[in-house]
Length: 119
Image (tube, rainbow, N blue to C red; front, side, top):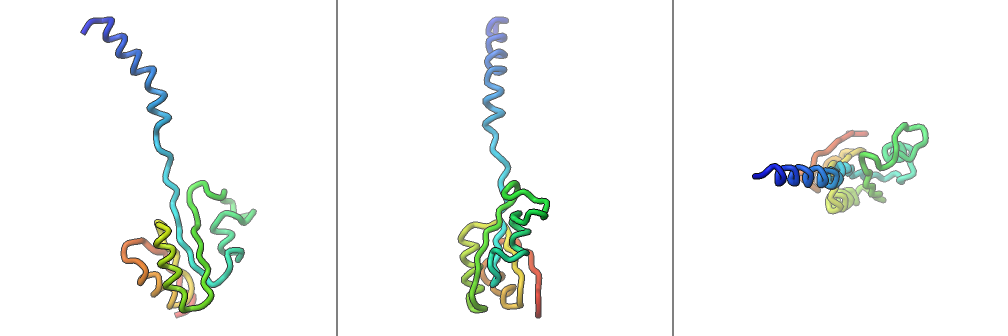
């Protein structure tokens, strides 16, 4: 390799470097799946989604809250299956025991955060 070839190679690599840096993928947003009988406008869901002004979070900077509302206890399993179909990363299972059991029945592979209200 001659000196001229080496300098050309070095110059080409230096010119391509900014393009390689810009091509990096953005950090993946974590998707939480939540199900509740309460509407999405309830204070707990507003805080978690970052829509509550005093929550100190910025909406959609590092996570997304996928929300599904159910009308009755019998709808919990259908609702959790819907969230799993939306390809969430983590399920938030809150509420009565039926909600927790329904979340476990909907998937065996997703991590879950569970909070029992009554048992």
